[in-house]
Length: 234
Image (cartoon, rainbow, N blue to C red):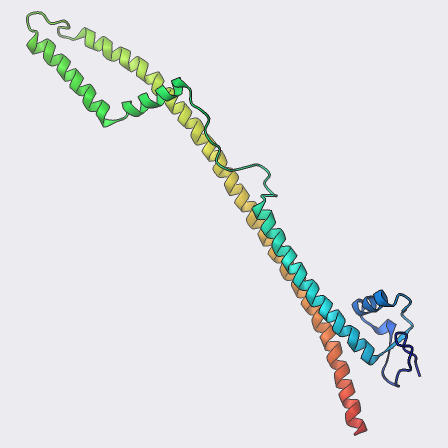
C-alpha cells in the first residue's frame, strides 16, 4: 500500500493519487505547504478533494480581487486623465487692456439698432438744420461737405477698431476650437481604453471560469467513482 506524503499514513487501495497526475494549480498549492512534495509522491483521494476545495476557493477570491482591480484601474484612468496629460479645462481669459475693452464696446455699440437709429437721426437732423432752418446762412450748405468729412472720418476710425475686436474674437474662437478638439480626443481615447479593458476582462474572466469548471469536473468524476465503488460493495 502507498504512503501519503502529507499525512504519512497508508492510503487505501484504489484511492492513491500520484503528484504527476495532479493539475498544475493544485500541485503548486500542495507544494507551497509541503515544499518536499514531488511528482513521484502520493496523496489520498480525500486529501486531494480537500486541496481541490482550497484551490477553488482561492480561484474565486482571486477572480473577485482581479475584477475589482481592473474596474478601479479603469475608473482611475478616466478620473486622473492618465492618457491625455494635457489639461483640457477651459482656461480663464486674462485681464483686458484699455484698447481691447474700448474696441469691444465700439464693436458692440456699432452693431446695435440703437447706433443705427441714432446715426440716421443725426444725419436727418443735420440735413434738416442746414437745408430748412438755416436757409440764409447754413454752416454746412448742400452738398454737406462737412457731413461727408465727419462720416468719412467716422468710418475710417470705426473700421479698424471693429477689426481689432473681430481679430480678438477670432483668437478666442480658435482657442475654443483647440479645447473642443482636446476634449473630443480625450473622450475618444477613454472610450478606446475602456473597450480594451472590457475585452481583457471578458477573456480573463472566461479563462478563470473554464479553469474552475475543469476542477469541478474532476471533483465530480471522483465523486461518481466513489459512488460506484460503494454501490459495488453493497
